[in-house]
Length: 194
Image (cartoon, rainbow, N blue to C red; front, top):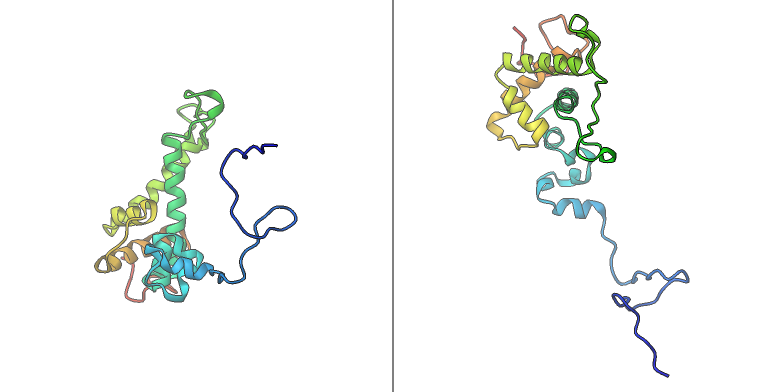
């Protein structure tokens, strides 16, 4: 009797569990997630903190390196959320159920011209514009947007400008308890808002 070969890729050799899964060899050492994270190019130089969740983004890696504070990181996250919401109102993602014509937008349609305060796309634009104007006051709008929204690495020489922009965002977004004073608590002590 001639046996027929199985179709597809042949199975890996080795002992198996009763359910058919391949048993891992006891001779192979288990690789820790920290060791894998340390080999990734964007996480190099972080040492033991390479496996930290903050190391996934450029702004998070700046927190791990000590270039910015956690409060500035919070301001950057809020700005990124405003940026994404604003972009979604400009050109919302396509809805696959309706082919290429349907779009999913946060705005269900703008009300009359006189009552645009209740429009979701108008609100998103106003919130982002307020933060953009705050960043422009210290000439850091392009640098912060590139870093936060597009994950562009920041040179160490540009860190003071980035910190100044994020400090201005902290004020504008009301993330500090001492919003009305000239001194920012828990931020860069050299920065005083004019």
